[in-house]
Amino acid sequence: GQQIDIYHAMRPAVRRSIAECLFGSRIAEHADFLGEQLQPLLALTYRPAPVMRIQQLIGSPGWRRATAARARIDDLVDGQVAEARIHPRPDDHLLTTLISSRPDDGQPLTRNEIRDQVVSLIAAGYETTSGALAWAIYAMLNLPGAWDSAAAEVDRVLDSSPPTAQNLGALTYLNGVVHETLRLYSPGVISARKVKRDLQFDGHRIRAGRTLIFSAYVTHRISDIWPEPEQFRPERWDPASPHYRRPAPHEFIPFSGGLHRCVGSAMAITEMTVMLARLVARTTLRLPPARISARNFAALRPWPGLTVEVKQVTQ
Image (cartoon, rainbow, N blue to C red; front, side, top):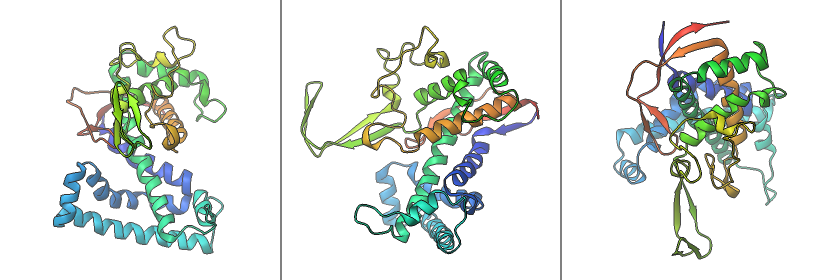
């Protein structure tokens, strides 16, 4: 009977998960604090770049809050990195890799470089994935039978156990839910590339040095590539379905593509599948009538949130 904003409930859960998977308990212990301090910084990315530059120039309250929050994040992460150098833990994972890394020039990463990598991976990982998870829940609750189909598959494949690396691939329908969500609600709405050499495209000459903007949101709605592109159809990702067609790399780009494809794509897909598997196995949700819109180009999210009603909970 309780109503909760599941988008905002997902954010700390995903943030803790990413912090622990990548950097171990040392950083995960501070996941909530990092979330509180990162929010003023993330809020700046919700605005167009010219507006952000104006805020910086005039020293707006939002800019000052972000600057103070960044200083607190720097102090925390710098302290944790220093502690990891002296007293490493077995679960420091990527933190150990960053500390011991020697790039092409043979020099270790600086303190600033290590800290920026830690903060960037956590912020980018939870901001995008929590939004995608909310859209997956929204899409399933709007498609009659989708929640029950996912729950039945999870029960059949997992038999009330958490998913493992060995059986995750057997969740065919849930895998379709994840990929179809990423098609319709790609976290990165637009991406950019700088042209390295002159090229011709669709009768236009594009000179080297120009910046090209492209959109996964638009690409994933081209009807010549995706039949009924506005429809949420998880079965289109099932190789056993007559509707299945493996998309070409340039046709499905929720994580961009090429050399700059998101390094966290596999982790994001795995995390979404695991969390959704646990959610549909343990809850039945209902979507009350509400007006939901999409916000943010860098990490698409439901606005003002995603309120759901909990109909049933099983242990």
